[in-house]
Amino acid sequence: MEQRLSLVTLGVSDLGRARRFYEALGWQSGAAPDDDVVFFRAGGTVLALWGRAELADDSGVEDGGGWGGVTLAHNVRSPEEVDEVIAQAKAAGAAIPREGAATFWGGYSGVFTDPDGHPWEIAHNPFWTINPDGSITR
Amino acid sequence: MEQRLSLVTLGVSDLGRARRFYEALGWQSGAAPDDDVVFFRAGGTVLALWGRAELADDSGVEDGGGWGGVTLAHNVRSPEEVDEVIAQAKAAGAAIPREGAATFWGGYSGVFTDPDGHPWEIAHNPFWTINPDGSITR
Image (cartoon, rainbow over all chains, first blue to last red; front, top):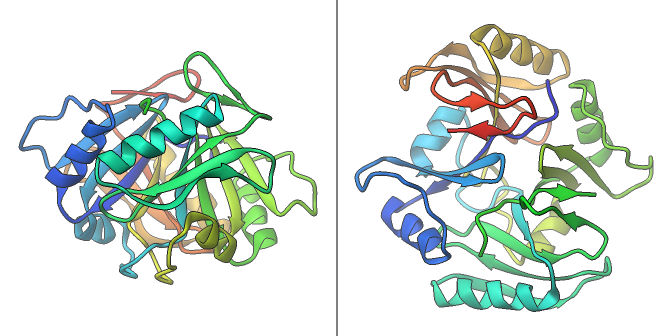
């Protein structure tokens, strides 16, 4: 198995609401209004939104109903940018379980959860490089 | 918020077991034996393994205890390669909720779950391109 991640699919309860949330953050999908899956390019990976029940069925898993042990992260270039993205997410309707602050590992981060409760850590990691294309080098 | 995904962290109950599973699939982390987080480069994104309780606390979420609405996917270049990766995962100890088969969307895919129950769809999507560096163009 090659060391690659192609796609991350987030199960959602209301596709239109989830799509509007990511679009309010400035993301663009190109999906048609009635598409039942919405794909966002995210560098060389794709982030997809799909009905959570359909995703559970397709994945052959039982839905635990809450958070299931996966957190996404979006690294930015400065602590100030962490605060800006957290503020933007809050304005778009996200919950903010953790405001931007210095972390134990020497960086600065905050967390928002999208309308379906999927957490995103927004992080400035001074030890990792964000390349011009947005990819990470560590 | 730029349209990027930097890191996906999987919460695990036994870091050594989880690490050995991904290493058995051929992945390499470069982590020290006693590191409490294991990072795998996965193209321009990073896949991390960390204790699930620590991840829940750090993410400011309640742990639902099961699957939580996130499925990862790894796209490959042929239906045969889907079957090969599923067989490799099974040999490494994965459960296989769905063997490789034609899909309703015109591709071919199967699903394995890692030792912590995180599902990976292994998919051949004839409509998407896998670039030489492993990134996806759709």
